[in-house]
Amino acid sequence: SQQGEEDPQALSIQEGENATMNCSYKTSINNLQWYRQNSGRGLVHLILIRSNEREKHSGRLRVTLDTSKKSSSLLITASRAADTASYFCATFQAGTALIFGKGTTLSVSS
Amino acid sequence: DVKVTQSSRYLVKRTGEKVFLECVQDMDHENMFWYRQDPGLGLRLIYFSYDVKMKEKGDIPEGYSVSREKKERFSLILESASTNQTSMYLCASSLFAQENIQYFGAGTRLSVL
Image (cartoon, rainbow over all chains, first blue to last red; front, side, top):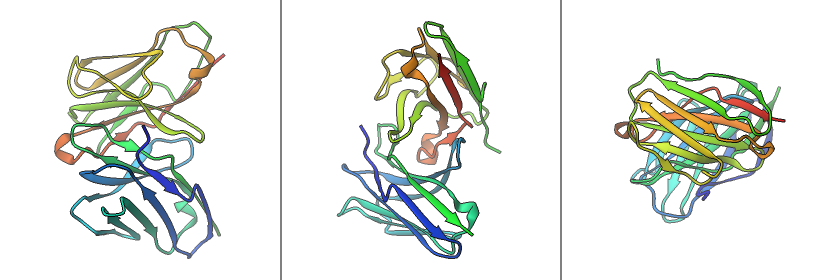
């Protein structure tokens, strides 16, 4: 039962450009999290936004949450080649496990 | 530093074999999870555990079982491996108090021939 759906599925940009990924979900949530996965490795937690928050920043990352539209976006500013990875959103609802989307694959070329 | 260790990075097994995938965390986390990841399908939850000796089915438990005899260790068992279980398997752990932020192992790429 996939809750989060990322858009686009794949994104290719040049170094220095900004990358925006979107996530839509279906039910009410307690928080929404973004994870990153380098090729062939495990996922790494990037940032968490609670249902009562609208925007959060961490370094070059900016996350927004619109609970009325059941959507979130992840913005990576001034992308670097090292940002090349897959990015997943995951939603948490109390009493359940995290539910992950299918991911956006980001390629940053130099 | 937080650490989740999966016993093997790569594993090759034959159809019908019993396969054990081991996962150990050193963070005293209550919750542990097993996922499989396939191209185009994202992460799918197989089983999870909220406490020692407790287990809950995820979205795709068929063909798998789990064991959690100690808090730090969560094992995934393929009772009789089949070719459609060839996949990347990811283990994760989390704390309720940390809003269920999950920490992942490096993954085990299993090939069943």
